[in-house]
Image (cartoon, rainbow, N blue to C red; front, side, top):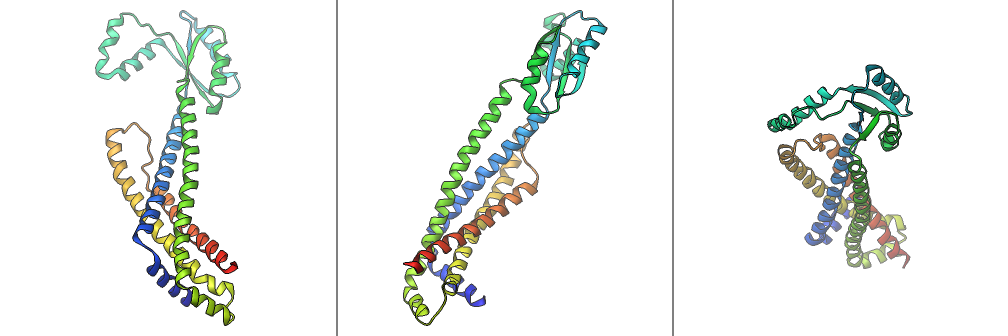
Length: 287
């Protein structure tokens, strides 16, 4: 094994150019960027979905008994988790706090224009629209609101970006395999006579293949390691600035998920290197 490692390392140093290595680093780095984008979009989506509430507005002048009866009907809808009554005064107070410095606008209205309401939490966010539709048909309900449209559009956009990312990932993986394979091919050309001598003296295909497989592994490891380190450093620098500019966006700030992604990229680079080396050397030996 020491012989194979030494031969693979010497071959990698002799045949890897800065251009091919740089191209591979950029390809894996871009792949990692898409991975981080999808991870953050998924995290934002989960945060939004977990905080979805249906605000159910009810008719004015509904008696206490009428409000209690309506609450029981809402709680009886399949998929409803928690129902909380929000009086019109509580709703106005919440609106005033949300307006902050512009809370004076509320005084212009004179009387409270908000109706009484119920805040409804659902057990499964995917059923929000169906539950809202059922509740809107109950007696004394004048309207429902759960940010309809925005959530659906955000999920659709996330899926679209995921599809684009998958297509790009396939292209970038193919590019990396081609780069590593081309490096191995140069090694094969430069060592063609040596390989022929080894075959004449009875060397097995696996004995000939091992140095090239290790060469592909080394090239893939170096390229993906540089990409992973650059990706981690860039993300930590960017997330600090974004956190101060837009603290309301629930981006991933924990180190663990980013480190796992970078390690996955390194393992992917090694795997692609071995795969490319194996394919090219196998084709060469069979020709």
